[in-house]
Image 1 (spheres, rainbow, N blue to C red):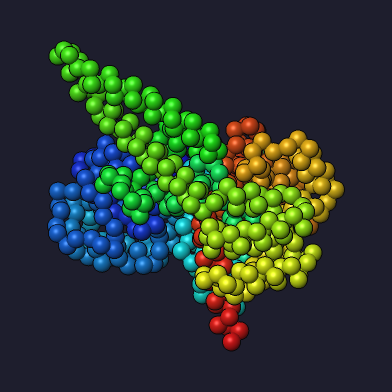
Image 2: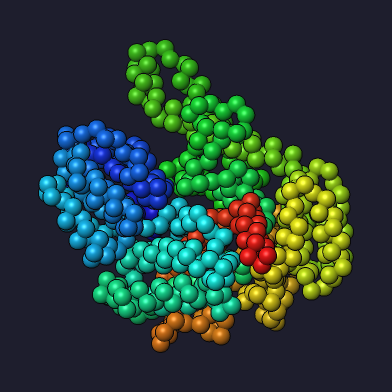
Length: 563
C-alpha cells in the first residue's frame, strides 16, 4: 500500500512499543495525518483511550496514563511542549516528531524536562497526508499563495515554500531515497521549491539522505498547477473524483449534514480505500457502472437481511448474535454508498450536469470554435445552469480559444457579468495566470507533431465514454518520463546531477494542488506498468470550487496591491 503502509507502520511503531494505557496528543496537522490511515478501532487496539490536541488539553492530572505526542517540529509546538513539561500531567512522555528536529529545539526540550518524565524523543517522517497509496497532500491552508509573486507577500511565500519542502523531504525520508530533482522552467515557485529541496537533501541534511544508491536514481519533478488549469475546472464522472467535486472530501471524510434527512451516525462518513472494500473496488469506476455495482451490493445485503429474519432455533439465534457486528457494519456501508450516489444523482439532475459536462469535455478535448461558441452561449442562456457552471464553461472556452477570437470571448464575458456571483475580470485574470504564454506543457495536444498525431488516433478510435474522455496533462508528462523524453530545456535539473536510465520511483509534486482525476491516472498507470512507481503529491486536493476560490483570492490581492 506504499505511502499509506509507510505512515501506518510509523504509527504502529509509536504505539505498540509503549505498554499500558495511553493518551495520544496531536496537533491540527498530525490529526489529519493519523486519521487518514488509522481508525478509532485501530487506536483502541493499541490501548489508546484518549486523543487530545496539543492546543486544547485539559489541566486534569492523569498520572496513570502514558502520553504519546506526535507533532510537527514547529517552534510553536516546541513552546507548548516546554510549558507542558514544566508541570507534567502524565506518568511518562514519549515524544515523536513528523520531521527533522533542529539541535536548539532538542536543547529546549532537554532543559524543560526537569522532572525527567521524557522517556524518548524520535523523528518519524510522516509529515504528509497519505490519502491513498500513491497520492499525498500537505493540506496547506493558504494555497493561493503559489500564484502570487514573492514580492507581493514575502512572509507567506516563505511559509508556503518551507512547508512544501518539509513535506517533500518527509516523503523521500519515508521511502528511504534521495532523488534527482527537476522542475518546470516557466514557474518561479516550482524552481524555488526544487532548489530549496535540493539544498536540504544535498547540503544541510546530506547525511540523513545518504541512502544506498540504486542504479537508476529516483526522480522528483516539481510542476505548477497553472500548467494545467483545465483538469481542476472540469466536472467529474468517476466515484472518488465526483464525490469531491459535488459534495467535498476532506481527509477521506465526507460531511453529509447539509443534504437532508441523514441518520446521526451517517452525518460524516469515511471514504477510504484502506477501510472500505467496496470503495476500493469502485473509486475509479464511472457513474453508470457504479450505479450497477451499488444495486448489486444492495441486493446481496437484502439476501443477508432476509436470512437474518428467519431465526427459528437457538443455533440460528447464536449465529445471528455472532454475525451481528458484521451485519451492522455492512448495513452502515450500504447506507453510506446509497446516500452518496442518491445525492450526486440529485445534483446531476438539478444542475443539468450531463448537458454541461458534454460541452466541457468538448472544450477540453476537441477543437471546433464555432460549435463551442454556440454550445457555451446556449448554456449561458439556460436558466437551469448554475452560476458556477456558467463561469467554468466560459473559463474553459477562454483557455482553449484565447488567441482565436477576443471579440467572441468578450461577448461571453458580458453575458457572464449578469450572473450574481461573477467577479469582473476573473476570466482575463485566469489567462494572465495560466494562459498559453505561461504554460510549458502541450495542454491541448496541438503544439508538436507527436501530440497532434496522438490526438487524431484517439479521435479515430472514439472515446469509450463522452464524459470521461479528458486525460490530464499529467499523463503526457508521465509518458515522457517513462520514455526518457522529458526535455531538459522545459524541465531543467537542479545542480550537477543527471538522470541515468528510467527511474523506478517518481514523485510528481504539483504546487497549487492535485485532483482526484490525476490521482486516478497515476493509480491506473501504476497498476498497468509495474516497472515504474509514480507518486503524486500537492499542496491541497482541488475541486473546481477550491481552484476558483484560490483564483479569486489572488485576484483580490492583486487589485489591492496595484491600487
